[in-house]
Image (cartoon, rainbow, N blue to C red; front, side):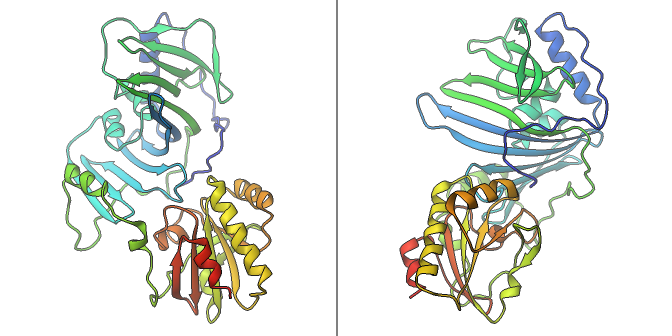
Amino acid sequence: MDCRFVSRCLLPLLFSVAPLAPTRDGDDALAAMTARSAKLERVRVLVRNETRLRDGAPTVRYFESFIDVRGGRVRTQVRDFGRATPHLVSVYADGLLRVRQLECGETAEQSRPFALGEALSATAAGELAAAAFLGRPPSFAAAPGKATLADGGEAIGGVGCTRVTLPGAQPVDLWIGDGDGFPRRVRGKSGPLELEETVVELDLAPDFRAVEFALPLPEGAPRLDMAAARRAWAKLGPEEARWPQPGDDSPDFAGVDLEGKVRLLSETAEQEVVLAFWNHELPASVDGAAAFEAAWRERGAKPLLFWHVAAGRDRAAVLSAVGRASLREMVVVAGEHAKNAFAQFSIWRCPVYVRLSDLQVVEVTADLAQAKRWLR
């Protein structure tokens, strides 16, 4: 998942976009948005979703959707803030919707033809991507009355927008980009729930040659009912049960070091190595890795190699965390490809520490004190 979670918006500078025609009212603006969206060929959009119950702490997720407008296909990946990798992947194509929970490798599916906006909503793509094709956020019921336009323009992520207010007992605001007509932010309430979504990255001419609009079932895996699967996925049990166990062969992984060189775990064959897994979004996990490195250096454990494994693929954010924590040992940025270290080791929350010997698992723990004992 190409998620460099930074607050920026990729403008479609490589191709021209005709400005939106002047709109008379909010309903005109919504109609123009859906008409413009329907003419697109491909879209990649990364959205930050924040929900909270009144006076509660926010829950933050990221939805990345790859939308083949012409083909009516959608691939969506969902990652919670602080998680190392996406935990949910869903694909809709040719009337078949499949959703895979990556933490347990289970897949649910249903067969049903969807219009593109409905398919986006069904694949858990959040509100904004679906709003572009539906004309309004899907989870907010339509209410009688006209949508209204706000006076004056506003900017979201440096993009000039028109704000439309959708009617209802709890009105919803939707900001639409003036240049390309794609929505940039939605904010509103649904009962006690407050929701805000903002586009983080948008590409209206992406290259989809490497995007898989298929989600094959693993060999021998059953097709789960969607509702039953969601109930099961809500009770996955402790993450530790899914880590590699002592005595297992270590999964290999590939990552990129801070100089841009691809590094493989298999380079450490016939050696002992400790790995510190952390996520720059969680400063406490970086601090834990820094404390582990300091203990390693202090105790002179030089024959024991030390690698940091940082989540994501945003090297700039990782570099910032490395500087803040004054890390000095090898740092590998995991990326989000087939050999992603976090997926290979089934690590979803950080920090986690791993000890290997000749590419065999010796111990895995989230307890810093226990990991430090390995260095004695």
